[in-house]
Each structure stands twice: as structure tokens, then as C-alpha cells.
Amino acid sequence: MSAAEADVLVTREPPRPGVALPGRFLRSELAIVFGKRRNLVLLGVLAAIPVLLAIALKVSSGPDDGRGGGGPGFFEAITSNGLFVAFAALAATLPLFLPLAVAAASGDAIAGEANQGTLRYLLTIPAGRTRLLLTKYAAVVIFGLVATALVALAGVVSGLALFGGGDVILLSGTTTSFADGVGRLALSVLYLSAGFAALGAIGLFVSTLTEQPIAAIVATIGIDVLMFILDAIPQLAWLHPWLLVDHWSAFGDLLRDPISTDAISRGLLTALVYAVVFLVAAWARFRSKDITS
Image 1 (cartoon, rainbow, N blue to C red):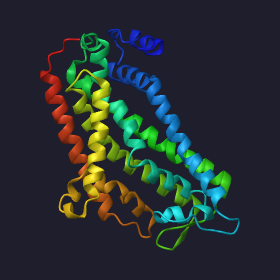
Image 2: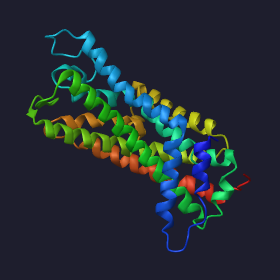
Image 3: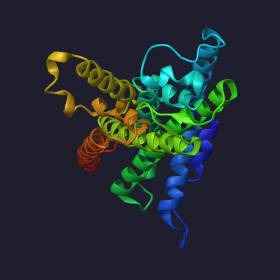
Image 4: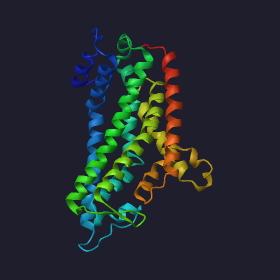
């Protein structure tokens, strides 16, 4: 445990009368999640990816190219509007880097406390196991949202700096204002964050099964990679709609006019089902778990 993390744990004394426990507890959890060196490094990597992507495209494209090459539709439009760097960066970090950040936070949530010997101490706080679990899950969800928003923000800043802005030509060919494009980007961040919240629930459940945070993190990211592999096998098309990751790329529909909501609605429903099922499973496991450390 680092000195910074130890300082945060010192603040976890029983609440004073009249002080709302949930707010203090959540702030304490957020301080620990965002204070871990591993998580800070992951956030730094996530912020660097859009910048490197924008620089690479700027160097590789000619002065009058106007197109960004292959890949999803918004990759092709980057050099005509820097806002698309944010969408391209989200697509680039979607299979591994963003899930890795969520896995690091969720896999460490319970297993990390057990590994450090602080879990029993936390349970002396008059919060109960259910509130403790929900607070940790809320911190994981917030971390996933911040990580996703960071990728989008870094993409917007680097894209506008290198390629400029202006009106946005959507994937459907229609033109909309820059402000509307930013609004669609914000909706994309929220949509993807819902999917990562479901992945966080999976990681939280895995975290209740072990006292080794690295094992929980690896298992969570392994589940994510496995779902992507299964989703890429055409012979398993019947299984694809049931996979959490199958719906993540639907955020591209937000760049169409009118916005196609079918795939997005299915994605949100799937994320909700995964989140509820694995959060309940984590609660059932944690509620009956014999805390020895």
C-alpha cells in the first residue's frame, strides 16, 4: 500500500453524529480509486492515445488529403473536422484500453481491501455490507465515466488543435452544427459508460471471489477479451446479441441523421441486465463471504 493510500484509509473512521455516511464513504472510495498509481497510469495512457492518433493522422495525411484512411466512418472524416478524433479514439480504446481501466478499478474493489487486510476494518463502520458494496460499485462507475470522458476530451482538444473544427458532416451525409456534434459526442460517452458500468459489475463480482486483486483484474479483462473473440466468430451469430460487447460499437449510430435508436436501445437493455445480474451475484457472494482479512 502506498503512503497516499494509507493516508486515505486513516480518514475511514466511524462517522461523527450528524454526518451523512454515504457521501463521506463515497468520497473516500473515489479518493482511493483515483489515488492508485496503477489507475493514474491507465488514465494517462488513455489521455495520450487520442493525441498520438491525431499526430499520426496529421503526419501521414497530405495537405489536401481531406480523408483519414480506412476504418470506421468517423476515421475517414478526421482530417476534415478534428471533432472526429474523439470518436475515433473512443473506437480505438473500446476493445482493450477502456475495459482495462474499468477492470483495474472493479477487480481491485473488494479483493484489494482483502489483500491489504483492511476489509474487516471497513466492515466495522456502521454501513453494512450492502452499502459498502454499492458504494464501491458507484466509485467504479464514476471511474469508468471519467476515463471515457477523458478519452473524448483529449480527442477534442488534440483534434481541434491539429485539424480545426466547424460544421460536422455526419456519417449519413447530412451536415450539423459543431455544438450538435459535441452533444452527440457527450451522448456517446454516456452510452459507452453504461456498457462499462455493466463490465464493472462483472469485475466487482469476480473481486468478491478472491483476495488477489491482480487475479480479479486479469479475469475481468479476460472475460472482456473472450466476449470480443466470440463476437468476431460468424458461426456464433446467434450468440452475438447476448454478448455485452456486441452493442458497444452502436455509439456510431449517434452520428447519423436521424439517430438510429434500435441498436442503442438494445445495448442499454443488455448493459442493464448484465449490471443487475452480476451486481446481485456480487451482493449474494459478499453477503455470505467469510471475511478473514
